[in-house]
Length: 86
Image (tube, rainbow, N blue to C red):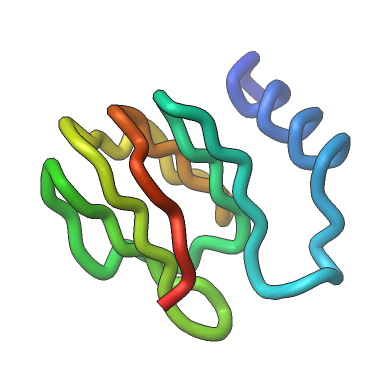
């Protein structure tokens, strides 16, 4: 297991309880970390939509990039303006 994977495992176990809701998100001005991701619905520099168990999560912003999707977790970087379930 790589260092990055161990970091996400530690972060996830520290902050999230998977039995609550269908996704969780930690958001700052520069990044969004989302758990419970099942796939990417759409992607552009202004909006990323990902599938979660009961719908879709939209991340809006500027210069967005999907940095990592692994084992149900996604990291989206750029200038984050909003994260919402749609």
